[in-house]
Image (cartoon, rainbow, N blue to C red; front, side, top):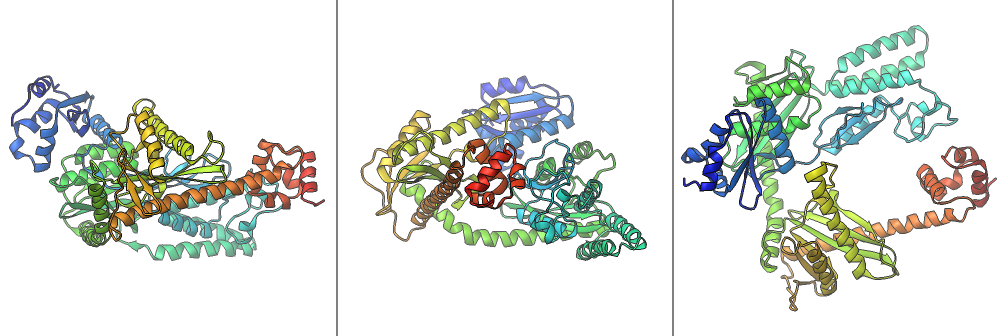
Length: 622
């Protein structure tokens, strides 16, 4: 292939050292990130052996305008840097997890005197223990519901001193051991939380043995009620264990990873084996796999998935050999702190059968998903294509945002932002805006404020990503392909002004939707666009508009209710904004405050005896 003088000069200056290379196009967009033991040899191979490359690689090479590189000291450092660059930049020609969101983890806050359990998508070095990642919040909640029935734990925000007079309802229904009243000691409570941690790690045999010893001690001491409670815990655990299939006799923690390919789709299946028992399985869909080898897809998955995983197993069984096995194994050993960790490709025996089983599951999963996608996405693809053509958009509107304003006679105004991706709601990215700068019923100025605040948040996300590396709200970090303004030409004009102010008119398309005839208006055009009455494009526009309207009304209603609650407490002498907020946080509503005793009221930070007496007097109770 013909190489430009610019690239020729770059190739001539490449170092003979390990590192990462970043291939970019003429607009400085990142195309691909790779690593190499020898940067000069690896990068030159893209251009000097082009005939041997896949069609996808040849297409990428044709777009390369310049190449940057980062030199490191070892192949392991290059691997870690490559993973971090791919994770941050998501280059289009790299193989990636299709759903690259933050997966949920179960966290036990062992740094606290009385540890709590929570679900989080952020892993911090804060002294807590994390278990996961899980791909389904539903699965996490099912697990926690089961664990709480076996090992009750507290979930409230009380300050636990062990001196409270009365526990809450959860103690009555045996879902909390009531550390607030001192019914369980701190040591016993932490021991129970250790059992939960062991359960989540798959160490059920040790739990049963320890509980059995405790049961015998309680029985010999004739504390039969406690012994019976421990017996019930053991039986509950054994029922769970019975449902876990024993698949290996070595007692190791291992993951079985396999792969299926159909057309341009790739599915990776994992079996999670802990202490020889199959405790769960999951699948993952990969992006950018066309023209890529099974080896590349599998390597890409392992690096991305296990960079997020907290608990790496002792063994990982793979269906095929991968070129990066040695260096990935070295990285995982360093990450897990286990020098015995191994990646193996079994040739026979039980491990080989497990790999084959995982492969069969991956094939069946992918077939089922493709059938589902064919049924679901045809209409969505058709709707997006119709909008692209009818509105003469520069690209398919894969991300659509719609905005609406709701208020009551100009008071407590709220703006809503709803997001649709690939034609379906992305509810995690919905946001609402309490209007701060507009007085009275002025929807146009309110919309200007909402759009301005939204785009300022986008600017802030870019600055954090490029400079500070701070936490980024993804709902604002991504720009839409299309904005739909509910309100016709008037709101469309406001949107155009805001986009021009942020110099985004060329990057974001915007249309106004008139409610009466479902007319769509483009900027600076007087004639409306009418989509066919039974078209998928119109149905999608209506769904987006209705969702924005619903979300705005709900947000406004909630704000109105909160305002009513707060205003009721404002009538009580001595209760200002700070104390009012503390009371509502503690009791949830004025009704909760009204039912609280003087003792309970004085337990709220900032509430004095005089405040408590005033509150009781206001609500008509002694």
